[in-house]
Image (tube, rainbow, N blue to C red; front, side, top):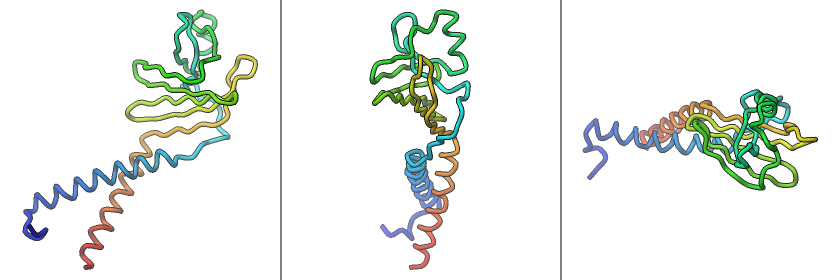
Amino acid sequence: MSGEKRSFFAKVFMALMIFTGLCWVWTVAFIIGWPWDKTADWKPEYRVAAICTNDEACSIPYGQLDEARTQGRLKSLDVPDVGEVMEEQNWIKWSKADGLIEAKASSWHFQTTVRYRLEEGKPVLVAVQDVGAKALYFGMAAALFSLLGLYLRKLRG
């Protein structure tokens, strides 16, 4: 069946499906290539991997570390080499190598990765990769330009 014999709605559907695929590919590419910020300061919402009082892994926002210590909810910041915790609105995964801990907090609309090391029991920030909805917006724009390029090329011959 020739492409010219398709109905208008079939052509629109095909264009939307291609656009959706391109959005996915471009967004994943932007997430993978998102730059690390090595000059950033701790934000209170950045998650730190920890061991809580029940000897289970947990994560605590940086801004609440002192409060968690005084309330007795925090046992230690020295976590196993790898681990993950499912929380109410986040998924936290971490890995530790050569004294550097990389904790990744993610949800459906963001991904924040924090690299830090422990000095005298306190986390010291090394680098941050904070990917929010901007990656999706950039992915959608790149997908639109890619789709326009594909259709312009098709028109050309």
